[in-house]
Every structure is written in structure tokens, then in C-alpha cells.
Amino acid sequence: MSDAVKQITEAVAGSSEAEAASVLANLGVQGPRKPKRSAAARTPLPASRECSRIRSQIEWV
Image 1 (cartoon, one colour):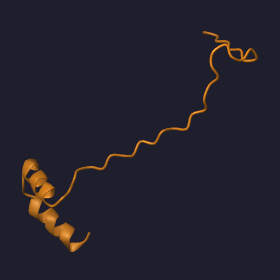
Image 2 (cartoon, one colour):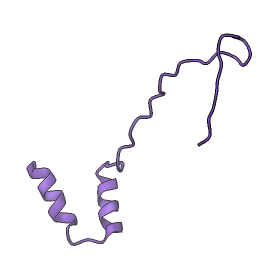
Image 3 (cartoon, one colour):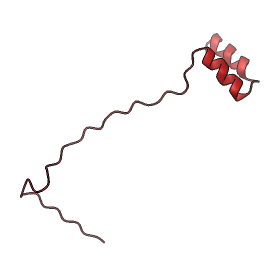
């Protein structure tokens, strides 16, 4: 850890969660990063009844 991070950690170690959040917010910390949601590539399906060669069968077991 860098010295600055150690100092911040020591400064908020004895604080309540609300105080630590306030200190970190004043330092510009924005909270946990949210993962980027990427759109999954999807293969388009043919419209229903458009292709007579496609047959579907479901067997319930």
C-alpha cells in the first residue's frame, strides 16, 4: 500500500461507518465500481412459420 492509502486507512480505522464514508466522499471516492454490462451477442431467430424446414419437438419427461 502507498503511504497515502495507509494514512487514510489509519485515519478512518476508529471511526464509525458513516464518518468513514463521509471522509472518503470528501476525498472523491465514489463507492464500489459497478461492472459494465455488455450486451451479449445473440443470433437472431427466424420469425415463426417463416421457414418450413425448422421443426421443434419437446419431450416432457
